[in-house]
Structure formats: structure tokens, C-alpha cells
Image 1 (cartoon, rainbow, N blue to C red):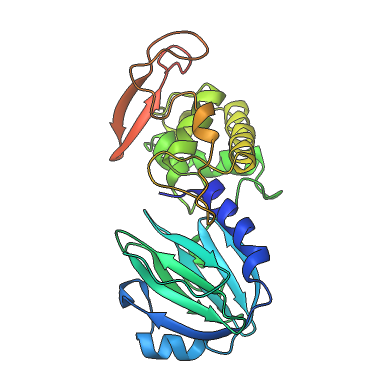
Image 2 (cartoon, rainbow, N blue to C red):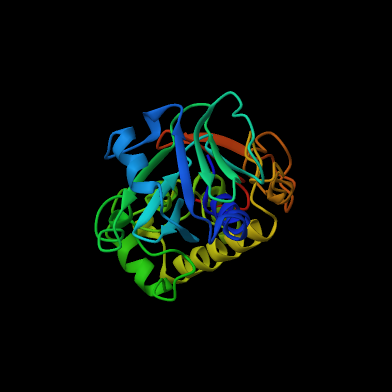
Length: 275
């Protein structure tokens, strides 16, 4: 699943390509991903709108329109592909947006788990899904002290599952939580409430560092993720623990282990991350 660095990479690629373009037509080849409206009404709202910008909030892509927003979540396999001229849709292409200059934007999704919905300027941040999100690690309001106060209330919840909760800390998915906890030297099974203020601050600092580095490297391509140019990310080359079960730790040489925690595969070094 594309996480914050991958979604940020997609936004940065799409922004200069589609910003300022006006939607002439929208072909819905499969309406499963559309939320809130039927396909005909959804298309009616989009035609004639100009894409003013492409923004990101958490793992959501926000196409800022002349009037309101088109909110997209890629889920497991969603991808956007821009084309300068008309291009025949390939298999698993579900939405084709044609602009007045005849360039197009295709949405492709093998599993059809992705979603698209419209929001007004007034409701974009006051209704789900965005209203359910906490601050992002980059936000100056996310201090170690503020995060510590939230985690202290989680008496029995593992720090790994707490950091995956987007109402606690936005943007960290499975890959980047495992990497953050390794760099912070925190065992994933530790309860969130057991972390000291100093340990929480380490988690915050490492989360920002991991996400920043991942964005700079275009995200991580673990399975099928590519950016809109079809280019893969390279951060997977720098992973310490995720996907490396059975391999030696890059720091101490101990074997990386994997376990299930909260239903998610969790990777860690039992030597570097003491319980």
C-alpha cells in the first residue's frame, strides 16, 4: 500500500502536469471506487472544473478544483498515469479524465480498493475522512511532549499498533513504523504508555527523518508501487528491518525477526530493540 512518502511523490509528479487544466470529460469504466454520488452525478460535478493544485493530507491525494476538492485514496494498488495525448485505456483502468487540451489522466487499480469522493471547500477538513486524521509528523504542533501525553493514555496498546492509528499520528504505515522503531531502538511490542518522554521524542525525531529520506528517494517499491512516470522508488534499498526477516541486522549482525502484531507483519532486531 502506498504510504505517505509514496503519496507525496505522486502528488509532486502530478502537480506540474495537471495544475491549471480544465476537465472536458470524464469516462467512468468502473464506478466501484466512486463514493457519495452515483457515477453520472459525480461526472457532472467534475466536468468544467479546473484543477488548481494537487495537495496531500496523510495518505490522501487532494485535487483542488475551482469549486471544492476531488479526494483520492490509492489503497493497495491505485495509480495515476498522465498522458499528453489520447491513449487507449489498458486493463484495470477505471477512470479517464480528459482535459480541454486533450491530455488525459488515467486512474488504474488492479484490486479496485481505491476511492474517490468530492468535498466542498467548507467540508473538506470537517467531514470524514480528513476530519478523522491527526497532525502529521512534520507539523510543528507534534511535539514529543504532546505525543507522549497521547500515548500515555494507551495503557495496553503496543507502540507499533498505536503509531499505525491515523487518529494518533498521521502518515506512518507498516513499512515506516517498523523502520522508525528500529532507528529509535524501541521494541514494537512495548506498550505505548510505557515509553518515557525521551523515548517518545526519539520516535518523533526518527519518524520525521525516515519519512523525509523516503520522500527524497521517491518512496519504497516493495511490490508494485511506481510513480506516475512508471519509475520505482529506491528507499527499500535503505531499509534496516522491513522485509528483511532472517537476514543479519545492518547494525549488529543479529538475525532480523518477524512476528504478527495487531494483524500486521512486524519486523525488528531483538538485539537493537530491547523489550
